[in-house]
Image 1: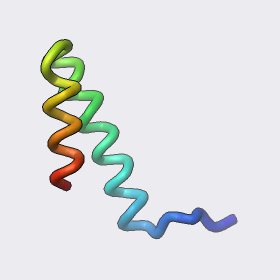
Image 2: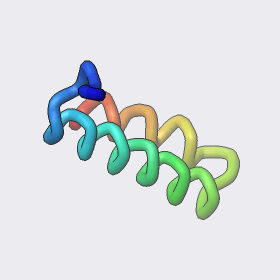
Image 3: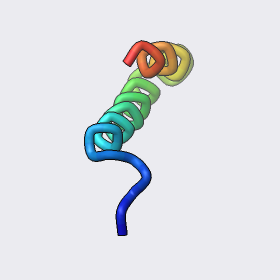
Image 4: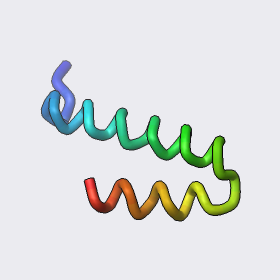
Length: 42
């Protein structure tokens, strides 16, 4: 079963979600906003 996303897109999606999670854990209040900006830049 093939995914709609290509492999590079899937990797970027996983990496961006992981990055958001890590940043939000380290910076509970400002981390989520900062991570959102970071993901948009990616």
